[in-house]
Amino acid sequence: MRATDIESDLNDVLVTEEQILAKLDEIAARVAADYEGKDLLLVGVLKGAVMVMADFARALPTLVPMDWMAVSSYGAGTKSSGVVQIRKDLDTDLTGKHVLIVEDIIDSGLTLSWLLDNFASRGAASIEVFALLRKPEAAKVHVECKYVGFDIPTDFVVGYGLDYDERYRNLRDVAVLAPHVYS
Ligand code: PRP
Image 1 (spheres, rainbow, N blue to C red):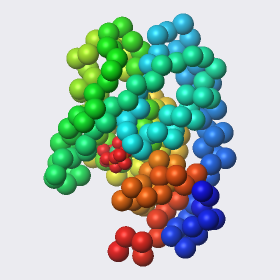
Image 2 (cartoon, rainbow, N blue to C red; image 1 turned 180 degrees about the vertical axis):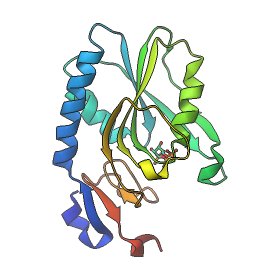
Image 3 (cartoon, rainbow, N blue to C red; image 1 turned 45 degrees about the horizontal axis):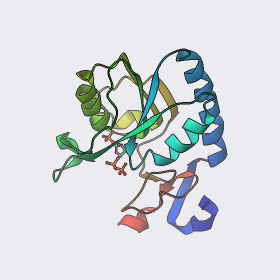
Image 4 (cartoon, protein in one colour; image 1 turned 45 degrees about the vertical axis):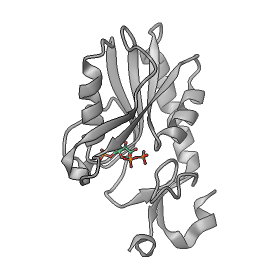
């Protein structure tokens, strides 16, 4: 589904599918060079990262394993609590692995900050982050992110894995949701 198919639900299109795929090729080339000869493991954070993981992994010129975490951000509390619960842990032992966490978006940074702390004691050789989107003005904690696709404003965005109430994840582009949809 493209942004033009649901025009009345959206305001601006911030990043098109074509721009995303071009950026993934660029970052995949950097990652392939940076991790040459290393035991790389991609870790995706469900569910938002499904699309970026699928396209990014296929943009890489080498075989690479993928694993997944499912976390419930912030439990029953608000987004600012920073409380994260593991709903599905990794199947992979991280010992000696070069881990690249693949995220769709860094908003407040709380999810990734927690995840990086959680991974720190698992014996990985290195842990880095690739986030397709980042909202610098929404940051509550600093997260070291080696690869960033696009910095975007703090608007409510959907598409390419990002949802509003589980909808819009299958939109190919990233767009600002029109306020009439959620207000
Ligand atoms: C989104 C996104 C990140 C997190 C970023 O996940 O996929 O994991 O929020 O926000 P933060 O930087 O403020 O922590 P969400 O909890 O919406 O779950 P989902 O991926 O299943 O949609």
